[in-house]
Image (cartoon, rainbow, N blue to C red):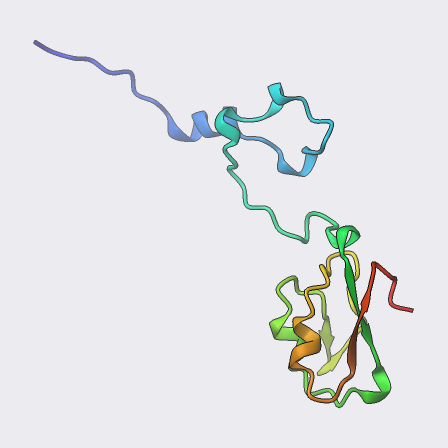
Length: 120
């Protein structure tokens, strides 16, 4: 008894099943999603502005900041930019308001405020 199998080109199969995750939203019809909602590309907060659903907002008090930069590497969303060894303003488009930055700041330069405020 012999069996023959069709050779499947995995790359071709993945390309036909691929869903463009940058175009998925609440109005996406289910017929445009991959079988089993398989995702073939990683999603990151850089692709999506996730800060809109923040319930707490970090406020940066520049006058209290000593530029120790302990806050930047602990931000899970990379929302604290550093340039020329100085931290910049929060990227509120991606900050989710987790408060980790406030907890690590030894100088009280970051204060969490309730609500989704623009930081002013």
